[in-house]
Amino acid sequence: MPFIIKKLAVIGTGLIGGSFALALREAGAVDRIVGIDSDRSNLERALSLGLVDEIAEDACSGVSGAEVVFISVPVCSISSVLGSIAASLPQGCIVTDGGSVKAAIVRECDALIPAGCSFVGGHPIAGTENSGATAAFAALYRGKRCVLTPGATSSAQALDTVARLWKAAGAEVCNMEPGHHDRIFAEISHLPHAIAYTLVHAVGTADVEGENVLSYTAGGFRDFTRIASSDPVMWRDISLMNRDALLASIDGFTASLAELRRRIDRGDSDGLSEFFTTAKKFRDGIL
Image (cartoon, rainbow, N blue to C red; front, side, top):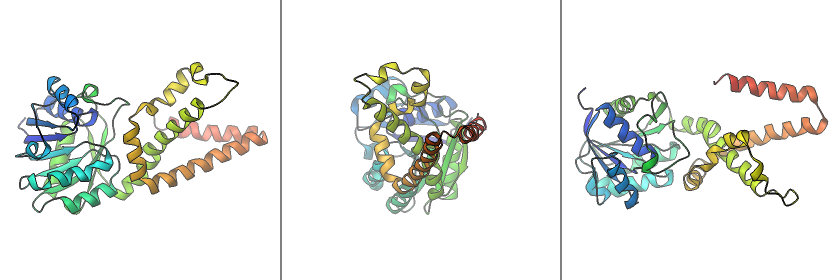
């Protein structure tokens, strides 16, 4: 098929950015991919692994001539990265991102994007607990959903181009208002990560007669807490940037946990059966 764009610049050549580049290369959707990364050793690995065709010494030179720039860095850094490259963006360039918080990013980036360019917020719903160029693989987005959150500077052409790129990478694309996105993903992504980290922290610091409690963990605990091996800096930034929505989700979870505690404390067999059965029905419904 013909190229969707000729040149793509990827800022952040880790799992998300590297997998996007690999998927587009495999699909024949992009002619040339330039990698940009503050971690020089990771950038060189991205080049040696074939994630990118070339690497840039700095972000401003790397985005020169790019039709699309994909920013894949921690969410608290996305707008500052855009600010640092804004003056170097070619006319008509489309900037998009892969961050999992959208309202603040879209608002900040809309204010920074130069006239004649477009910003299109994006969030691919895919990932693993691993990071860096070595974690990237072309099939990461295949069959997964990617949510686009257009803002004031998202032209129809820019939105269509970004959607076509994600579809070429194998994703199913939908559009969503940025604030609505943040409230949904506080519940289904940010809260589960917070719970996983909290559970491991609680068990790891538990004092049970001097035993190393974690040494007794098996499949269930390890499966449930796998995401607590994700990058702590990334989840620190997500927690702070989506603070209000995440706090509301934590309050809702705390209320549910308190209700479970009450039923256990009362010895309420029927109540516990109802609680667990309701949860099981919800869980079985997403399989």
